[in-house]
Image (tube, rainbow, N blue to C red; front, side):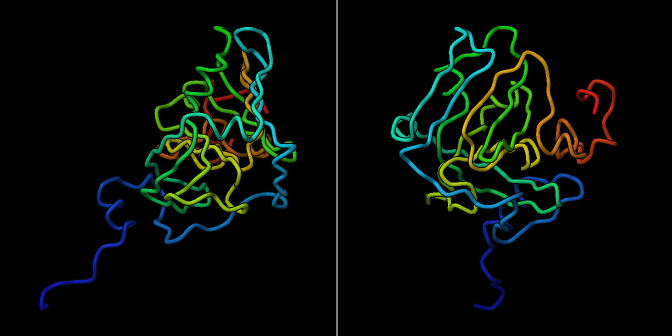
Length: 213
């Protein structure tokens, strides 16, 4: 019919509803980005651990079957990569980070978490960011299981931070009573990683943003 254009894509609708962080561009599709090889998933050996400064001083563990039985929820959240692409309006499914924290609470002195993934990869976050209302230990995207390349069986999604703060292939959470830099934070990335403040690199850090390099 004359005067009617092409239907809007989901990315276009999402862009109209939420402003992009500075320096970002909309990405169609989902590029694969990670450091190192894709690990092979072995369900009989897989375990998710919560350890460090826990409230009871103990380590808490779930095997894959037990973790999969935890309450499932969905959130809609953008993914902002530090390489300047943004994927808007994705629906993520999995276990809310808050659920894990409620089941295995931190000690009152805990202020940060270190998220541990396969091959010893790590990312540090403030506890408040990890427990945010849209922070999710994701198993699904848009109703489909994550692929191995995108983090199956488990990746952390923290929409308010750059995507490197949400590792693929997550295996555990360490509660910490003081901040400590993770893998990329030790290699020149900003300790906090707020895309709205364009906190990409450590040279941009201000006093109090993180431990000394």
